[in-house]
Length: 110
Image 1: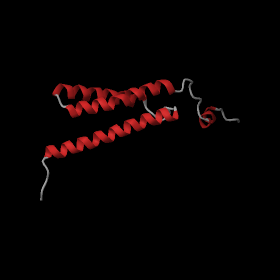
Image 2: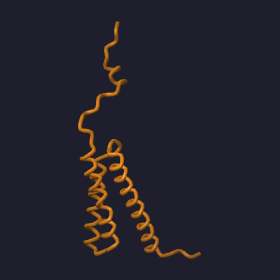
Image 3: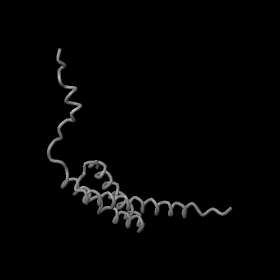
Image 4: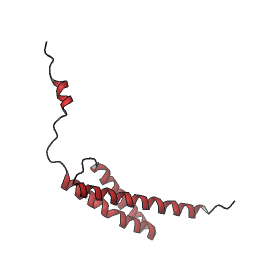
């Protein structure tokens, strides 16, 4: 049975996972800007994703690996656009508590 070398399998898996993350990042940014809403998005996650991309870009530059550098360059813009979308489309007014919570705070009539 023929098995490809570990390095080749690792490169293929890294390429596949990078492509999927890139597609997912751009899809998420598209949804934010299309719906003009960040109600279901975690700003903290977006900041961490941006930090992750900067870290990988720095690592790629440090070891002179152009595929890692390229992925970092391609994946960083959606992080910036997502942060911008979070700032632009966030809900500025605090939400009122749901009605079921209001009923819990009412005192029972005796």
